[in-house]
Length: 213
Image 1 (cartoon, helix red, strand yellow):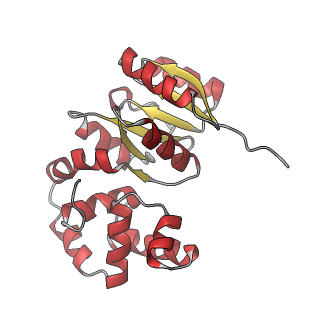
Image 2 (image 1 turned 135 degrees about the horizontal axis):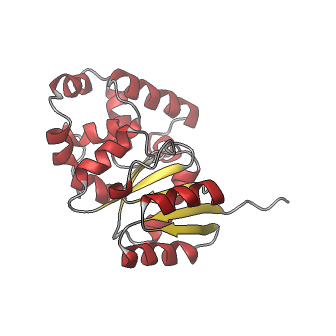
């Protein structure tokens, strides 16, 4: 039986204490290998080229790093005052975001999900972006109105996307086949004219379909 390769992670964070904490937490996890850490954009770019990580934990103050979004997956490290940088990174195609203070199990979960190609909305980090998204993204009345035009099933799916569930978890919750869920998620993203499910998930919060906490 062929062994699965570990998920290779780069931690790109300006704060050395946070950088060390994240690297230590992930380094202790089975199936995850921290291939580098960087405190500035230049070092992060060099490590990206040399170590080819699967996932980058990115301080938004270091963005942009160049054409790195999507491959590898980028998870933006959120803090209380970084909403603008996080939203810019998400629009550029980052895989999602997680609080710098995330608990070990949550951190490991979102890293693995991002490595598997999922767009990740950490519930804790989502709370920090709901109000900021409305202010920083400009008028969104029409997009919010599109939420109201979704079918009942599509709205159910949107709520679960906003709660950071994966397609497999949504399928189990709604008792649907996973391919059906993938189709429904794609329909929701398209109908809301979002760039990806992360943006759709934020709309679920803004419309009041999801409640922080």
